[in-house]
Image (cartoon, rainbow, N blue to C red; front, side, top):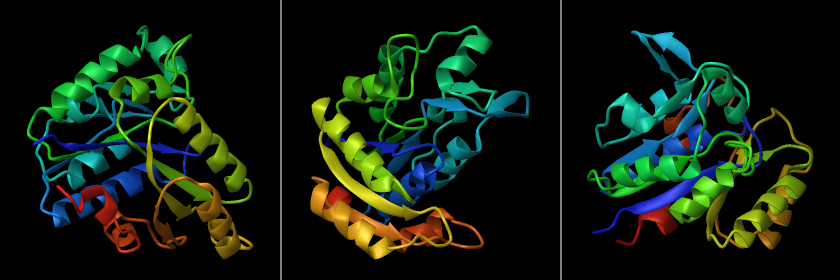
Length: 231
């Protein structure tokens, strides 16, 4: 049976894509699926045990129920915490959507029943001089999950991102309203406005979780039945 594959993007960097993707991996496991999370490109990596590793990729590895080497989860680890195309240029490499997509497809054939591929930054973050993260998503063709960082301006950012996803010919499979600030004025009204305008099911509204937003805590606010409930 083909794995259930999704591409996870966000309205910006720092909106909780990794936490949501990791929580959804826990949901996949709860639905009896062997899940695997991938982060093909990660900038902002640190040296550990003789290699560069990224905290987000390590979290995806921890929450994956299918065992995989770190290099399989994060094949391109870049040290500077800057835009991926700039970090890659500093490292003397060129990121290419087709090569990243080939890696993802190879992992999809490794026995995963649920595959979550997390992008870097937002939808149009550059990979090189001509390609963006959207080109990777299009090359894969997976339905997209949008993480909306709930703060002032989120409606505009979410609708622009959703429009770009649709224009690229991809399906918006669902979205998550993720609390990224302690207090947001008119939070419920903003969520309602997004529900009225986004062409996909809201998978959950996650409040700002003071004291740490772990995948386990975040997962209690999500309903991934529409993603993993039918096989």
